[in-house]
Amino acid sequence: MTSKRFLITLAILALAALPALAKPNFTGDWTLNTSKSTFGQMPAPESMTYKVTHADPKLSTATKQSSQMGDFEMQASYTTDGKESTNEGFGGSAMKSVVKWDGDTLVIETKGQFGDNEFTMIQKWTLAADGKTLNIAQTFKSAMGEGEQKLAFDKQ
Image 1 (spheres, rainbow, N blue to C red):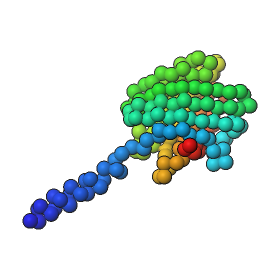
Image 2: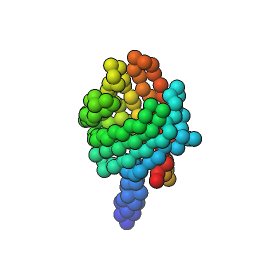
Image 3: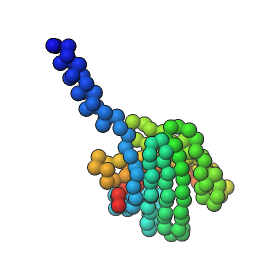
Image 4: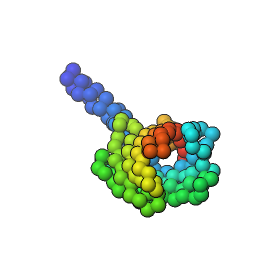
C-alpha cells in the first residue's frame, strides 16, 4: 500500500510540473509602450508594432515602425531550434539569425548589413507572467558604435 501511495504522489507531482516545462508563446499583436521602454542613444520611434505568430519551433514576425527616419516594414521567419534562418533586411540585404531558448527567454542573434555597415544584434524576449507584456532587451554592435535598448510591448 505504501508503494502505491508513493507512485500516485509521484504521478501527481509529475503532472503538476508539466506547466513549468512549457515555453512561453509570443503569439499576438503587440504595440510599443514608449513610456515603459528605454532607447539608449537612439531616438524613440513614433510608433512600432509587432505581429507575432509562434507555434514552436516556428516563429514569424511582421514589424511596422514610424520614426524621424521614415516608415519601415519588415517580415521575418525563424525556427527556435538553433538553426540559422535568412530573412530580407534593411535595403534588401540578407540578415542571418539564430534563435534558441535560454530557459523561458527566447534569444535571437542576428547578423546583417545596413548600407556598408555590418552589424550584430542580440534580442532577448521574455513574456510577463500575465502574458500581456512582451519585453525585448536588445544590444547591437557595428562600426558606428554599440547600443542597448529595452522595449516593452503591450498585447492588443
